[in-house]
Length: 151
Image 1: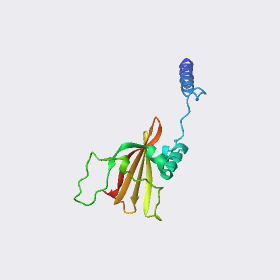
Image 2: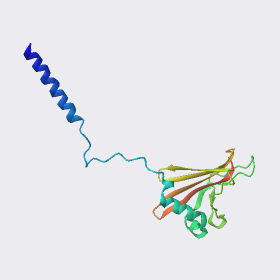
Image 3: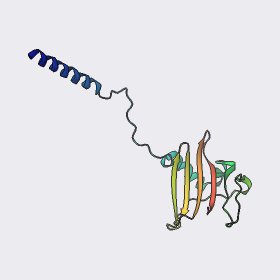
Image 4: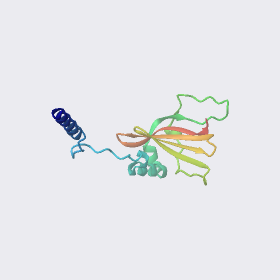
């Protein structure tokens, strides 16, 4: 019997050693788990662009991809919106800085890979507008605009 006990003891020690080496600690060469990254729209780069886009009309015009994809707002419930509509440079109305009108409007940003989408809507959510900004080789640009309206 003593030999069987020794044999079992050796196997237990062998298994414990394997488990110990299998549970090795992380070395310096292994990449650390990344902490949750901040949203692109919160980055200083995008914030600087967004502020300048909202306050400098020349900068704004230089940072829009014309003819710009988007939608104009329907004039009434019978208005049919052209799915191929494009905003043109010569009729563009300069966008001003966001104003929540004392809480009447709500703004939200969403990160989509390579794109920042901005949605502004009234309290009821019935009226909204959307802008999408993309980072191109020459920096951030407005790449889509859906005019404020009821959709």
